[in-house]
Image (cartoon, rainbow, N blue to C red):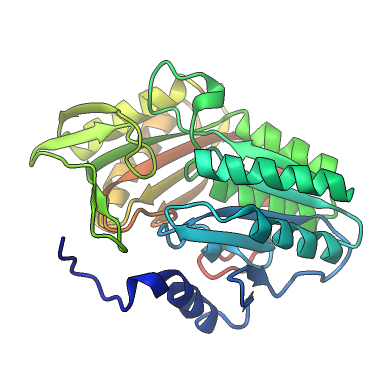
Amino acid sequence: MKMKKFLNDPDNIVRELLEGLYYSNMDKLELLPNNLVVSKQLGDRERVHIVTLGGTGHEPGLTGYVGQGMLDICAPGDIFAAPGPDLCFEAISIAHNASKGAGVLLIVLNHSGDMMTANLVMEKVEAAGMNVRKIITRDDVSVSGQQPEERRGLVGCVPLFKLCGAATADGRSLDEVYRIAERFMGNMATVTVATRGATHPQTGSSIAVFGEDEMEIGMGQHGEDSGQRMGLKSADETAEILLARLLEHISFKFGDKALVLLSGSGSTTLMELLIVFRHVHALLEEKGVAVGAQWVGEIMTVQEAAGFQLCVAAMDDELLSYWNMECNTPYYRV
């Protein structure tokens, strides 16, 4: 299939995009010959370091959040594919040495390839006697009836990077950072909606096909899940459907504060996202829930897919303080 994308050799896509990220952010990042993306804050002092892994093709996620106050190292894979365990073990080893004994938190999105790599890596980590804990993000509640362990990791990993990165900067121990991560994820959820699938930039193959007046709630990150197809709704109607699904899983009380993230999938315009966000904001305020933290934009994409992910979390004062702490990465700064 002929693609209209500004690319060179498909076999060199990953290296070229990482070089572009590095050359445009040389004050924040290092790019190693094996493609590890490393923060220039690595080893700045004794503290917990944070590592993640995952496929490329979702820019700015995940490599775009390496830097001060978020990720220390990202081990990127091929397009939509997990990296191998050797690369991830090297990332953890580098981070572990840089932590000066404080340890490493490995954040893993619940996708089969990522999980397979992470499980193999943790076997090697345990054999090496490293101080490492693994936490798995399972924020996708789009598909009704799924058990929590079946839910995939979506854009909710990005605020987790921010909160954990702030906690490490605050000098919290590995166990404390882990507990903060668990507390956040225990009251955080994400729903996806799509109106068009993506094409794989190396093969040109289409990922999910839609009718002209059709949308789908719950097709996952790449289109791997079978969600609920329906006719295209207005911005307000879509916001109401998605927020209702999220509130089945989040325990808000009157007077609580929420984090709301709206991440475009790649080709949905900022105009549309802002119109949806404005109604989500109003709906929460009607329920007595204040939006204490927010982010609207392309946070984790799927090439030129159309649609968005809506992520909502209940926030306490400590989480909000960590959300507002300074960070400086290529695609998020405070």
